[in-house]
Image (cartoon, rainbow, N blue to C red; front, side, top):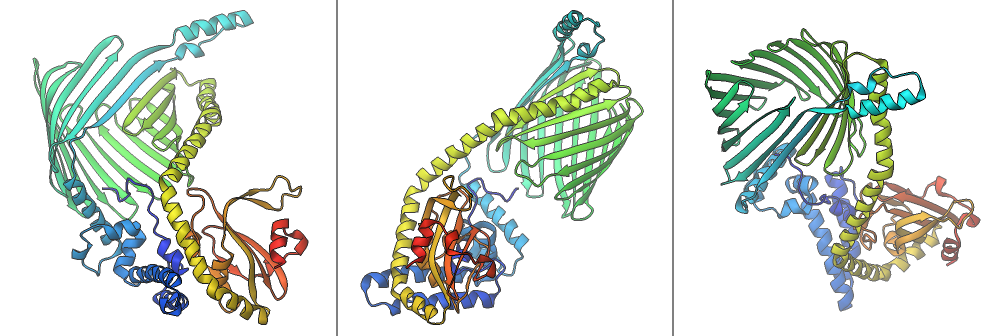
Length: 581
């Protein structure tokens, strides 16, 4: 079971941001930050009821953050799953000396228990559709005259046909927490002949290490027509090995046709696994494969002996570390029946739930073919296209360049505008849903700033007396380039808040250190533009010289720095006005 949650991404940096420490902070660094905030915002330092109440609220937040992060057990849970993980019931029975991986496994178990308590009777449909196209006439020789070319092209396009089509649908309906009913059916046509099958199944999870599935149905395919029975099973043998097996018995006028398939796998190391698959009965064969899968690459070696073919295969996949999760594949396959075939292609994510892939297959015996694949959630669409029955350079060129040009145009004209519109819609929805939370956090931040004003003036006077660090202006939020400025050196505030007072309160011994976690959790800060990129802009004076710096939301920052030094004329009018006070 995957450890990712279905809800929005968990924010597990708030406590670190509140204490202004790194996620890798030691217990000593954690304790020092906690003591500093306690001394600054202790409720007993304030006599006015309003300020005292605000100090108590901030002190409680700081104490809660320290309480969670000072305990290695709760800190590991918080790092993995944030506040939501701490609120999950059941941690009290978990051993406190567990590792990070064991805590993650325990969380998944508790999640399953919670899902079991609110199990709903729902169906999970899965669909697969494929259409095999034959476009060999498009690459047939044409006449030399321009008119003959158009006529031949028209005739070629009119000869494009579908020689095979297949569609399958399955539905899974949970009956209990351990039993699931399955209904599946398939229909396909092949050169004018129709075939199909359907079956009913029952899957039962015997334990977390294994399950079994019983099937019964009717099949009408080739020479096999009649009922069949099937049994599937999976078993986790050890932590590093597993076994799957399936057996089916077909009943037809020709007699009984049984076959058995068994596959075992073993994890050889952290990134490498080996598999052995054996099939007895119809089309008996044996196949072994070794797969090495890392973060950026994947190597595959496979060898098969038996019917209908014997072959060797080498494959390589490169995974780009981009937001689209693009993958490039290339493989070499050599068999007794189809000769040597080279396949290459790419897969990329075009939306949150959709992946688009293209594969080109080139072989001396089978010619050139192109396969387009679209996977959307639990739906799969496949379009194998046979371009030529011979190895023609023109077909290879069009099979390679054509899909690439089509994808770039599709991405530019359709996908990117659609994704931008979707992102804006989600941001708008998030702002509407979190408007009350933003208003609450804004009120909290304003009350904390009011609390800080009682001591910030004394801190400024102390820094000025030694020509130390004085914050003249600080803004946090979203900045956009100022188009009215010819040199493009300044930025215009789009959705920002003034954080001059909170930032001055973080100055210690003429030094300001901010760690590499989001700054929206700092006392006196809040997120003014949820879901958008934010920056922190600071104008400060050190040794009677003006400085300026801008950093990203999660970038660490150290002030003062010689590289921040600027002339007063380089500041924007608003910044110059602020620095005059």
